[in-house]
Length: 456
Image (cartoon, rainbow, N blue to C red; front, side, top):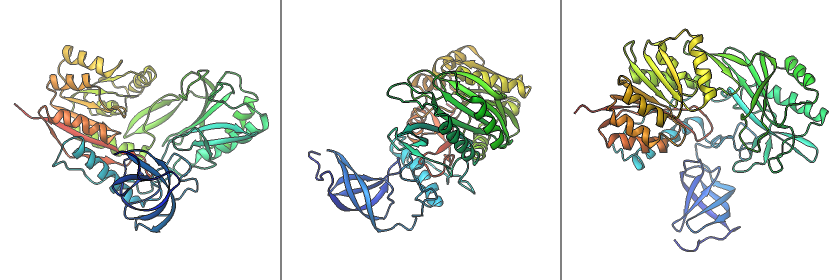
């Protein structure tokens, strides 16, 4: 397409006929695609064009002329400003169907799977207060401390006193830190200059009623730190740990530095399906404990694990899935490139007295091909890769070793579809896909599926 048929700042009526994977409404104007945030399928809307590119435009919602039956009033007043949630204006049942359809369309379009079965998305009874980890940014603007989350696609903070999808503990921590910061006049980190002390506040909680507060700082010395520690201890129930992450690098990465314990322990306790887990400040664990158990239960069930099973766990993180497999008696080897995660995984294996699991620190795409050459062949490989999906060398090694079962846990339907296509083109049979709503009110969805090698 050549020149855009629309102009910036032009106002037009538009019928919304689809929702993109990012949760934006999609309409057509004389065949020209326009994306409009916070609109839903079936709505007729008045919009203002804020971008008019050659291939697509972006509009800002001015008025809803004809409203969708699936629209609801967002629970949070910051929805549409804060970048945390995408779908809070969509009724929850419709959110679950949106996610199922997103997975289905990705498997058909990218994965070339015409007869794929995508089950209904497994949702939550109460899709709020589900996050066990809240990470908040801090800025000082015109002398005012702003503590909250970034506006979508910017680094402008939307001030938040209470986030409805976070554990309620976050509300108390935000209030205490904000009051202390104003009283002490502590400097806040500036991304452009690399100056300022206070960078981020992270709150972790567990189902065992234990809380950790992490202060991310651009330097070691915190003014009146004892006052802050005392205020947190007095104002936050079940507080077991306050740690400082000293990060002096000019980077957006929060947890990149030395850990210093300010109060209590350096970790808190968690339990996943009967397996004991200790969480350090840098430990990775899914942020929704209820849905984590749902997701992992399906992964373990699909693997059909017995005491005679031999499992390779790729991209194992802190070892949660591998530990669950080991609890069934299977021999397990987990591989993860993050050293802190492997430290946690080994500690948790010892905590549970598992001697049938070991962890290797290294890239899965490098270590697992070596294991498949040197070890007795495993019957199952479990992969839980990052959003970019599995590395090609890992996929080649799994297929080349003729592994009987691959259990794929995915946080990205598009890369899942790509990797599924690779396996099915090489003699693997795709089972049904089970989406799990790990992140209500966002576009994100987790999936688990098993691929079985067809006997020659």
